[in-house]
Length: 314
Image (cartoon, rainbow, N blue to C red; front, top):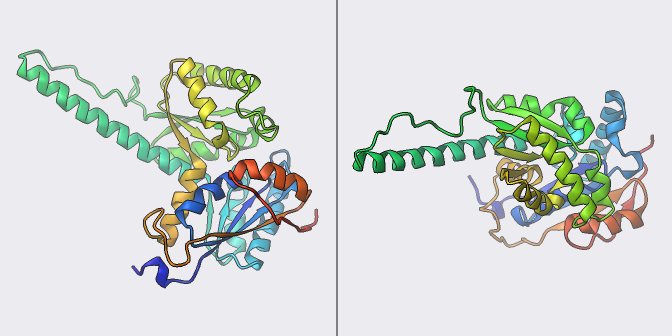
């Protein structure tokens, strides 16, 4: 495989119905710093979740085609709703690779589960060795990563109502022999967009959602963030889990998606700078530029400027 600096500079299109996809872009920038990025937020037509399947597919395909026309040679659908309901439509409409956010998140959960099992096995081996050296009875040891009823490990998925209703994560996780419990958290997106990342109200809402979810899925081992807004709440989520005395391995689907993109195009090791290692990004929005720049900067973790307006119709 040739080194990245011997290849043409990749142009990566990133699409979301709004601002959340900027967390995917945020994760991509350090992984593939030499790329040219084009981001489109279809803010005039959000939320996608309240629309019909046909409407979501039409919106998503038109947005995807716009990014392809701007020169994207790989498209990232950084929207869980569009991925869950329209990924196949987008893939059939474009002659370039299209990567969504659901499968990478499920894959990352599978890897994490295998890592946990390996850790438990090593722990059991050490415990058995100690028991045998002490002459103690070593029977009855059991892998704690297996559910009491012998079923596959369970993954708790936090997502929007539309994503939960699609059961996209349930299907994706089942392909990895993992069970899913999907919890709709409709209040989290507006709280994030209000900027209440570290706010008592947000902490209380998280506590209610997580308490309900863990009551239904007490044996969950992994928490998968199934909405691209949620990475901004990860510190608050971890604090809440600690308060509930129920630690879980947290999987950020935005980071998992960025890693899937890097693997697909065959980058140099993450963070390795090349001759043209400064990323460039162009931003488009279908509604208020001022609002996109203001809210988008919080999601991207750096100023979002020079946003251009584009009208993709109804």
